Length: 371
Ligand SMILES: *Cc1c(COP(=O)(O)O)cnc(C)c1O
Image: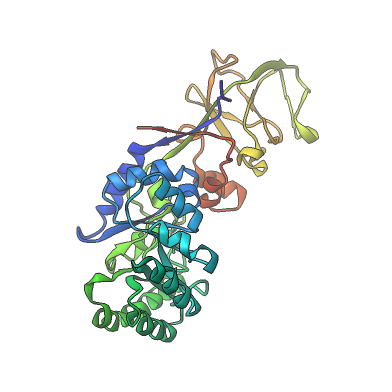
């Protein structure tokens, strides 16, 4: 028997979120669904299969290894390696039919050589830095690269992209910056279309971009966090109805009555202010249940919110179930989910973003798909 701590991956919620995102966009806009980092911790293959069945146009991963995992699992959609393809991985990426983000002129030569020996062109997405300051060719370099790519039969221009740095930002300055990024990008498109026609897929919008800047969605959009049911926007922003895909559950491992004054966990940060029923659950910071949740988080038992009692340990956390009827060893406990606490609220407590909470759900927690 496995440990009872599992992450349920609710594919019906994922499908719901796909439809909610689609409903915001014109019908002809395709989805390039981002499944990097093991689909934000949800399990890349099962998520990718569900997205393929839902009609996603392409998938995006960060690394060649992530792309290879999808191919070995039978995924047929175009898969874009957003982090680019290194020289040592070029042949492997091409063999697996992956597409490469191209953000450095030096990548043109070795990607072409990998494809020449195989006799089938290497699909590339030229990544333009319109203000993100991370990966991407500056606009002038991008045109030079595009001219070279057009002259090399071993390369095929599959996409033309940029990435927004501030679409989620709350300030007017963030909106202006994003609008300027999009204006720079838009300004390049007539020349891109002239050189490559409609066959090149133009894309720019991440989840926050889809929510806030969708009057200009281009050919494809690139949702990540919204697929998984979390908002990239500050609390209070109007949102479509997104449903969290991941729910973490476990079971009570040990249960006892502690007398008034008894301490709980490392550092004695919790002391029973009367007789308390304290349950131990098998999840801790080694599973991604952050130590910073100590003193702030709730779990849920039979629908009752129950506070975490004392310091979160590496493998265990204590909860105060005093007054909740019927709790016993083996009782179900929801650790993350609608009845307890979502990734957004955990992120706020921990001073981070829900992305980090989701991708850090530990390898020790099996992902179990449910419908
Ligand atoms: C991760 C990523 C996305 C998705 O971002 P979300 O904020 O999760 O929607 C889109 N595009 C690129 C290039 C990315 O790296």
